Length: 126
Ligand code: HEC
Image (cartoon, rainbow, N blue to C red):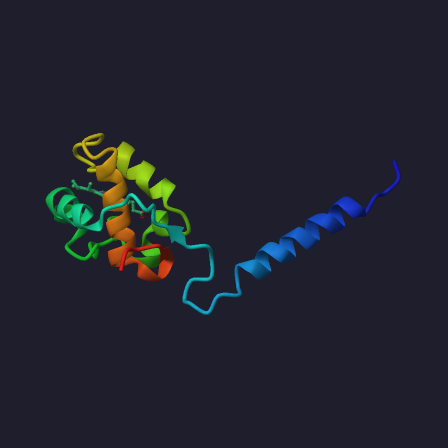
């Protein structure tokens, strides 16, 4: 079969374009930011967080790994909102999963991002 370089060349161009789009930011993190849904309520998120999450994760999300919710330590705080919300909904609080679903999962996810990870986040109500 004849060697066809074009598919490979196209892949290379796409890779370079996506790498470039990840490094044009001047903030600490260069990747896409998590987008807070307009329906999220940060005050409720704080109340839920302090009532249900703080004992394990610390008042500022600063518990030791793997419970740390800040920056690089927080795997699910990187780049997208839904994976964080879904994880909270399905697995947190660790001792009582499925007790913080719906608005609770959305609001606590928004609170964790806006309060502890503002540089990774867009759309926090001012
Ligand atoms: C009983 C202790 C406990 C409570 C309460 C708890 N968590 Fe966790 N959480 C953990 C542990 C331990 C982990 C590490 C992963 C694991 O072992 O399941 C974790 C992991 C996480 C992560 C993933 C961090 C990462 O690196 O991406 C998030 C997000 C999270 N918890 C959010 C919450 C939220 C929101 C609440 C309250 C609704 C909550 N947790 C309540 C113990 C707890």
